[in-house]
Amino acid sequence: MPAVPPPRVLFVSKPVAPPWHDGSKNLVRDVASYLERASPTVMSTEAFARASSLPARVRVEPVYRASSRFSPPFAANARVLARLLRGDPLDLWHFVFAPNAASSGAALAAIRARRMMGFRGPVVQTVASAPRTFEGVSRLLFGDHVVALSEWTRRRLVAAGATRAPIHVIPPCAAAPVEPADEVVHALRARHDLRGRVVVYPGDYEFSQGARTVVAALPRLLGQVPDLTAVFACRAKTPRAAVAEAALQREVERLGLAPRVRYLGEVPDMPALLRAAAVVAFPVDDLYGKVDVPLVLIEALALGVPVVAASGGPLAELGAAASMVPPGAPDRLAAAIAALLEPSAGGQAGRAGRALYAERFSPAVVARAHDALYERALGEGPG
Image 1: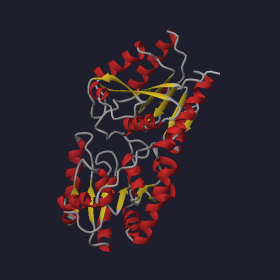
Image 2 (image 1 turned 90 degrees about the horizontal axis):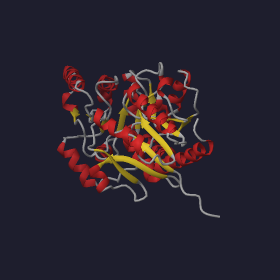
Image 3 (image 1 turned 60 degrees about the vertical axis):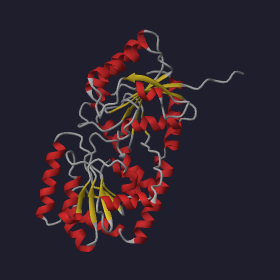
Image 4 (image 1 turned 90 degrees about the vertical axis):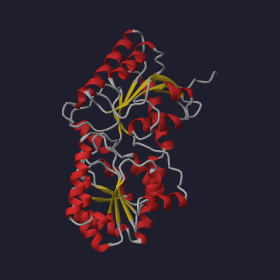
């Protein structure tokens, strides 16, 4: 009996190419790289397609001319649409992006057009990050199978009426960082004058109250741990970030905390900063524009760095591996951080984080779940 060829999966996403700081395209890169049964094709840039660093079994198509910062421009989206309408449709399409009217409308139009041309493959759609509002979100979901990155998002989709297609919960993933060398970590600490025990906030300034909650927690925390240094490692996504950062710095100065606070912006070597940290503080109540469990938290788990996160949202996926505090509760945040700075508690939290990473957030585990989903979808056919 002839061997059954592996299913050919076309990923439709932002350009899978450096820089690797975007959760949705990193998810495509890692899932495609670790698939065991499916044969993946990803959309990338011409430069990356010529010298891809992905495994040989991952086919890289030069659909994009260049890698964009966050949202691809109109011309780039037009090239994706042209690829969907004229290229080899393969066996299954997997769209990975945040639901929005423009992208969902274009995707649905391409699917309908290829159906008229004879394409019968199923369509998988991953909700790469939660929409600004779930009201009317069912109109933006077009997949025969929908993937939510957390149980929280699945529940919100169902409550909003997204019941046409089955919704599967498959968490995001990230490759475990290479353990930074001690001398690299020491150099980073010296370069940024990171004294004593370091607490890192790697969230945003403009969308959530997370940064403000950390600042509000610092007076109590420094009263308990006077040798602590707080680091804000926040990448600016919009022009509002600079305004929000300036306001935060004014509040830090008003509280007299400036000597114990550093602002590093976008960090070129996040694993080294995570290794320098005693705790990652992430009391973020709004993950707009981020995957449900941001990559930096997954990397912190993999490195065994204790995490404090906001309860009540998708970060609940971290379970017992993280200390959960209500959003906007600085006293609770300060107490949770201080507890994790105790060596025994921090060590136990680090071990729990590594175990959860291996069980739930490693690319191999997440890719196996996608392999199984593709086989199910191909067995059922399109909806």
